[in-house]
Amino acid sequence: MQKFVITGGRPLIGDVNIAGAKNAVLKQMAAATLTAEPVTLRNVPKISDVTTLREVMGDIGFELRRPDGHALEIVAREAPWPFIPLEAALKIRASFILLGPMLARFGRVILPNPGGDKIGRRPVDFHVDAMERMGATIVHRNGYYFASAPPDGLRGAEVTFPVVSVMGTENAVMAATLARGTTVIDNAALEPEVDDLIVMLQSMGARIARTGERRIEVEGVDTLRGTEHRVLGDRLEAETFAIAAATTHGDVTLHGIEPAHLGAFLEVCERTGVVVETDAATATVRVRGDATRSYRPIDIRTDPWPGFATDYQAPLTVLLTQAEGVSNVHETIFEDRLDHVRHLRRMGANIEVVDERRARITGPTSLHGAEVEIADLRAGATLVLAALVASGTSVISGIEHVDRGYEQIEAKLVAIGARINRIEA
Ligand code: UD1
Image 1 (cartoon, protein in one colour):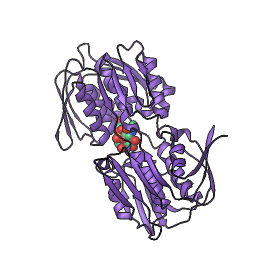
Image 2 (cartoon, helix red, strand yellow):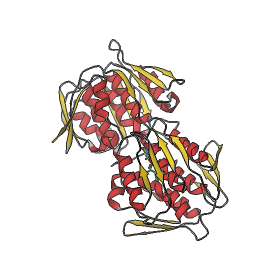
Image 3 (tube, helix red, strand yellow):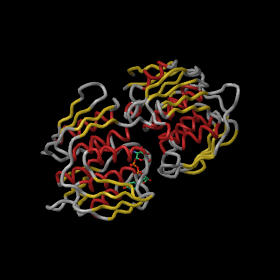
Image 4 (cartoon, helix red, strand yellow):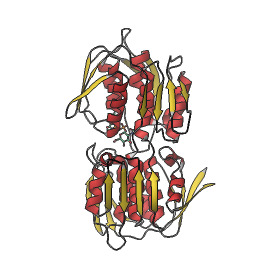
């Protein structure tokens, strides 16, 4: 088991290259199975979720190669073993994204209840309902979903999501690209990663258009072709480094991130007093902390895009421990996403859990190093951020959760002046 040993208190100064987005690349790997022709993805992050999905897709019978560090070539000629084992799905909830494309292209797939972060129940009923509307039969038995399409393939349908769902939208869009007729998806997700997937699918010949504020229309085609696509920058990684710069009163320039993709996070920076300069032309964002002025507290609630992302919520809490006054955080998307609070308290934070979705943070507090354990990906980034601003040394275990979504986080942090080591425990 590996741990991070972090000694905090140093301002972080320098440049960071932001990797390709985890929440985009996994869907794009799945999209590559919609064609028999080769697909090349560029800017693919070296994270363990990509490795896990690569293994899953390799076991199904697809060919996946990494010719150089950040490219990935995928050829999905046939699917002799259209089965996803429970062990892999427990590691990576996004494996459920193979449902739509595999049903559309190969007519069947067997996959288990997915895992992923420990942030609540995370059901998949929206995905199942959408596929059934398109004519699929899905039987749930012994923890597995046995999904099959009619002999003449999926058909276009009207799909309305009761709650905005990122992966639900993506599964429905991908299934619809090869379905007969037109699919209309309402209450669809607007996240930049969804649009990046749509751009990739369009380059493969799919007919997809956003025709209303939360409406996507897909006209099915007979086949799709291969493509080459560059994965957009990871806004969640960018936000993590931005908070590290702000809390340590550093000065960090992020490269490879479209400022518009940071969305509501930039507004939060403005409201709290974090200094941000953006340049869309060069895809750079500079974040500075000013040690002579304190940050302002804010009230924030998480929402689907264009709202404040649930994945930003836990890391933002670290910034709010450094703001002067009382901040309130309301998590509306997931029911169990405040697990980081008890660890931050051990590090000296003054945070009250109002109920399972609400936390009240009183600052500023001087955080101090502690031994803490990470339970999920974003909570992991949060504890790393807390340790970077804390006095003294922290020992953080469970760092495999961080490796799921951050490429070489410690190397990037060391390069901007952090004292962080990965040790074998
Ligand atoms: C994606 C992101 C995750 C992010 C989340 C919300 C990936 C791999 N993960 O997850 O990082 O936190 O969007 O922005 O892209 N729901 C149901 N039934 C379903 C599906 C979802 O009830 O079948 C609920 C969820 O429990 C949640 C809400 O809908 O309350 C939104 O979840 P969803 O957008 O689907 O999250 P993911 O796509 O799984």
